[in-house]
Image (cartoon, rainbow, N blue to C red):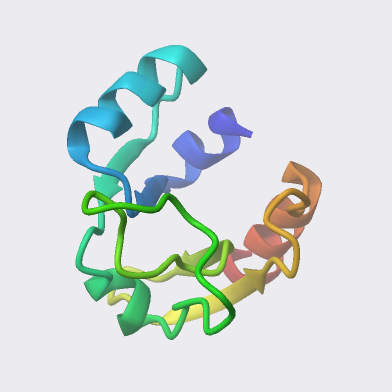
Length: 109
């Protein structure tokens, strides 16, 4: 999948409500190459309407994020227009790479 993204000039970004230092630690553990961004104030989450409206089930305490985003995969064009979005009902089950590649091909070929 990374090869196809690279051929098409696609940049992969991840967005999390975690602190930057937590993201850096996860990056090493999971060997992720994508750019990983911290969205502690939920600005990106809210811009795409992805704030989880259900009960907050994240960490508790003063370091907890205000809310959690709904897990989602988005395909954006160069201008930031959403071409495709998959919102996960269950954060433990997300679409596989084949679904993302099919969306990519459908919108960019």
